[in-house]
Length: 219
Image (cartoon, rainbow, N blue to C red; front, side):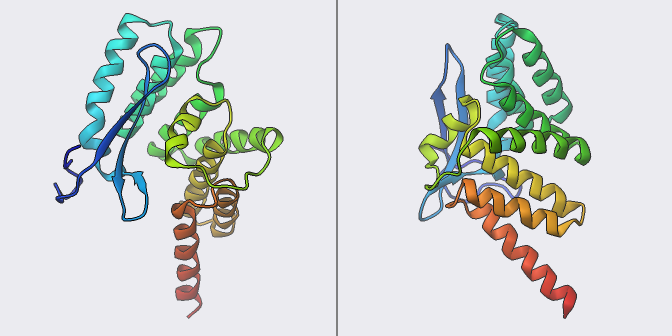
């Protein structure tokens, strides 16, 4: 545990870096913080922590260039340090590295969509999100319980399609629609995110913000 620096420097709060073993030397990584109720992803300190994850996976892909999962985790870490073009390249190399794509084609597509969003290539990103969501709607029943943080990392990074992956894809598509000023579409996707992850605060807060904006416009 350590107090990592966010955009405004260190704040005295401790963050916990979690490395969850996947396969071989591949680890699913996140940085968590206690918010008083739950452990949540401390996204504001990713820039401080994830360069070391990038270096870890750069070494792995040099040693094992045909291992798609190392490229996957490298691409994920590059998104978290906002190296979006490099993340796209790593994702493409990962999908081409092996006949068996691991963790899954949908995992790589999710990373690509995030990188494209970071590059403000919103229409390309939302098309990928829609493909993931359409596939998930065919394969997954709507869950009745929210995913726990302990299962969230593993289900997001290793499952073919999971409620966590679906919830995040819906939420992130909603964010794009909100940026494009398509608020009704944004509401639709935030609501879908809550169907898959009923306990997740992000889409709920996004819906509240959109309602506030609507009130201010109509006032």
